[in-house]
Length: 261
Image 1 (cartoon, one colour):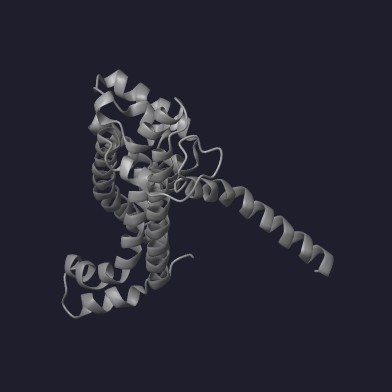
Image 2 (image 1 turned 90 degrees about the vertical axis):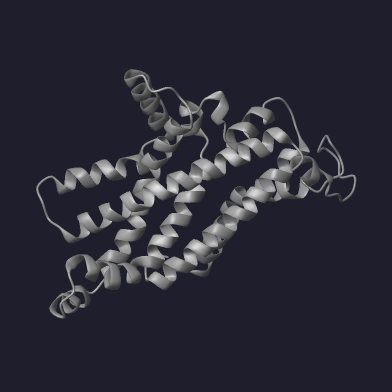
């Protein structure tokens, strides 16, 4: 690779990073701006954070998001982990079709997932609410859990489980005492990823939530359409920081598990 090509690639990388992170950096900066219009810098302040955390509507939607994300994680992690062991350890007819079906929500457009789930709920007469939101979030979280855990399962040495069986352990005991502890960091990373995917989800939730189950992304989106609100910058900054922390922790757990980085 010539020096000119390296410089061009480096410049392109910098431009891409600026395109991705500059809007977020501006949002964070304006959350500390002592101006309601967010047009001119008028000084440093933390009052918008106080306003955000005193807003009943924002706090209620934040609680809804945490509730939905917690249940989506509790349901998607066992389902995705079981699917990972099934697809990696067993060969059966229809395995490829099942794998494609499970991974489809990962690659399908979110608007397609949202509209299809809404059509399903309407067809079966299921009233929109927390249950429909949780089911919807589990639908797109399971593939991410599957991919994260399966990478760890693929690297497991079958001899460890076989040794436990030879020493008298039952298959269930060998799985619980040998396999699961080794796969635990990958499962934990998948749980963190699943939680943040559910917490941040907007499009699918928009189609499957009711007025009483509005999550924080929907609340923020609805308010930002009515005009600029610095308190939304503040709450969004908190979400960005929390997301980065969770993603960093998930990456650390994946490295400990020996999975993809």
